Length: 244
Length: 302
Image 1 (cartoon, each protein chain N blue to C red):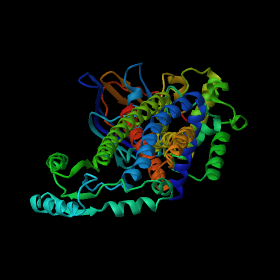
Image 2: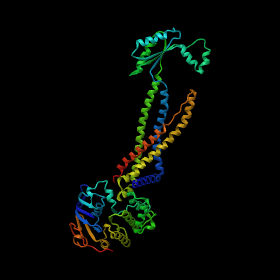
Image 3: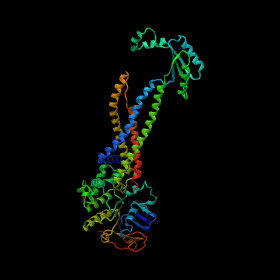
Image 4: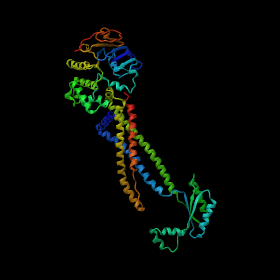
């Protein structure tokens, strides 16, 4: 579960990137965050992942209030949130499987168990045959899938992805989205930031529209599709579709 | 517990991989630290080898008063009594060594035995050994007393026996302070070298650190390989410095042995004992880890 209550985010003394945002995402939802570049989509995802702190307001992720979370406890929260950033941040001096193993190594999991889980994650994203290949030899779509495998290998409750299909062709983008949908079907809460409204409409059950100084939640118009209360300001983008 | 051990094993693997990834750079760092460490080690070897020589010789402040060879046989006893009476606060003990007992002592030495046999008379004088009371400005007091005694009749020569030992002691004190300063300077060199090595590594591993944090690595997990890097670099460097010191001492000892033989003596420079050397290696490793910790804390704030 993710809950934002009157959250503000600004950098230094600058203007608010996000202003007075409130929403609640229930466990197992598939939400996509739309909006123009610079509107604060990435910032919103980073706030959910605990990668950045809010300037004001309260954020609750998996029952933990992030503003009350100590610096020591923050890494443990990150293990329950799989993050895929716009730049995949893969380690190019390591093999595909070593990239996927990293989140498990961080937890101190036994090597054999970790390898088995990493292989299972690679199988889920269709990269089993390339586990010993360096990521530089993978295509853009494969690198994106590798980043997904790394994000889900720790079996997170929440998966957040920032523009995961931005640089991919249509078919590859759909394959990537299917992977996300598969994880969502088994109960992983999924939040994806994207420019591609048409693509997202086929997979997401709910949309947030972020614009400079504005935030809208489609659930306010379609309460049946998202059984949550959400504060609404600005206009609403009611582009919703069923699961693919 | 097992999980922590696995994380340490991972940190060690990462550290060795990073060291081996840049072999020339790693080796250069090791040599710089090793050469720096070898200097105080050689200094310590010199000091601990010379110190026993100083200890063997009495450092008790003494004056030896030699009487004229033609002085009466009772003159020594009289003079000893006079010294005791006139300078009671400055002396601890006065001992008379008669010319006869000195001659017997010499005869006991086979090297002198033959030479003394050809002499018609005993050429040695009576002597009085005056042990001075210890305290401040001893050298000055000893000098003053020697000047007084030199003016007494029947006195031929007054010799400050302990002067050269005191000079050696002073030299050793100077050496110890010099060695301490050198060790402190070397510590700074080690700190700076490890700090910079870790800084460069942290900057080159920026991406990896970012990814590790992204997937939930704690700061301890991120820092651990760098601490190992500092500790391992210093341990290897300390071991290399031991090798360098040992190699350096071999030709030096050969040369010293030749010199010492001319004085019918034996002398060799030796490294400190194994427990001391082990403690030094551990100390240097801890120093490396601390420096790495300081560096990684400062250079991974991104």
